[in-house]
Length: 113
Image 1 (cartoon, rainbow, N blue to C red):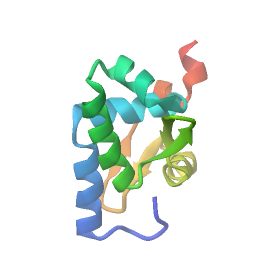
Image 2 (image 1 turned 60 degrees about the vertical axis):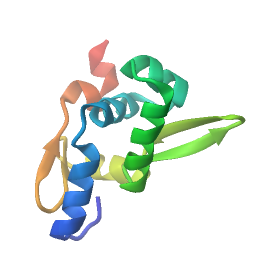
Image 3 (image 1 turned 45 degrees about the horizontal axis):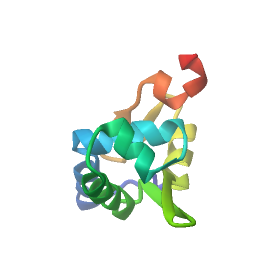
Image 4 (image 1 turned 90 degrees about the horizontal axis):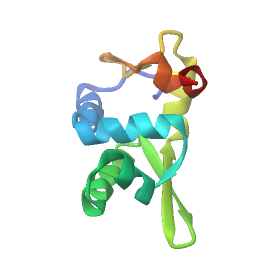
């Protein structure tokens, strides 16, 4: 994420944001490609208000961003998170206080085919 190490508080905020099964499912889904809320509702099998709540938490933590498409809002992994993952040779997100790794199949959707 940032080039400098995060403070303990900042690291705790990011960890808190991803410390939920639904939010991890959302991040994994968005690592594959941008999706609108309705697709995330279907994939996670959660209700729309529940998914929107989790997206707000991820957005506030700077992990995802929303883009308006008419009446719909579609989400993607934030450019900052994408850069951090691409720069990592270990397929991990270095928060400065810890590393969070993602399965190779999630980071490279083509390898799933």
